[in-house]
Image (tube, rainbow, N blue to C red; front, side):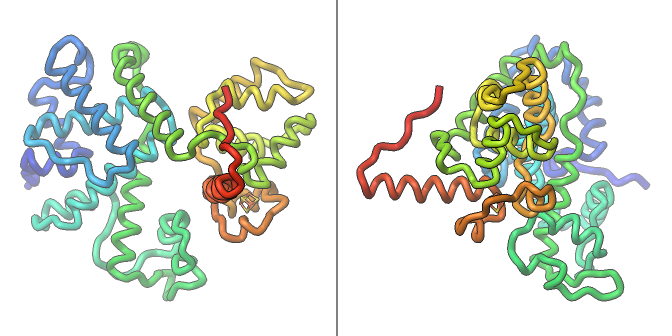
Length: 340
Ligand code: SF4
């Protein structure tokens, strides 16, 4: 017999197919939302939901209006898909994963819990995890305890405590949600939702700038400095080198035009091709690779003492910036002005 899922449960697990059926039964579609005041209110609420994700909030608060809660989940994903920014998608997936995990973890309805877990392809409470799944989920964890070499492995299963399992399951949900985005959005819908996307893009830009502050070239990690120096000297960078440099510059808040401006110093600069490549990287592959990946690509070069503590070029950049700011404060030198 089919499990009856209550409307309030659907707000906790809005990815279930029952949520789509729930909205369809009420005649709610994502088309023409802007034509009604209610539709515009849903869009405004979806923007707030995405803004919570941009601000790094862990849990988006539950709304007393069950329909609005489910619609904003769907719309938040649609808006992020219209914007197609990987950084935004990752932030949204992280927040929604924590929210979903929060409810699964405390779920008392065992049948509902297994239905949700089955939909997500996750298993609770075994105390072990297959090695391949473990490596996939623990790859983003930094602490040494997550390295496979530091784990007890028996017959292809990695031993994990309940707390560790919680962390990895939340990561699995995040990966599933992130991998589903961006959705394919028709151009007419992108056009219709453009004003709401604009609000989100501005909030994202502000957040990025607040996180990284004014761009400070002297704080770039040695690998990025080497890549920029190579580009300027006319070296034909590998795809991974070009990608790492562009993603890094974009992650610290540079616009495509500013990144293209750096590449324009290269003697064989081709404006159309450069803009195409920069746009492509920014739209589809947004995150700077971690140091371990940079090492594999052969572009972790000129390491310095700060690199010993860094696991990510962006982490290096943040630390170096702080170091330089303290040094400037000590000697009374004003911080650099933002680049135009
Ligand atoms: S350790 Fe990381 S930050 Fe340092 S050069 Fe290598 S990749 Fe860059």
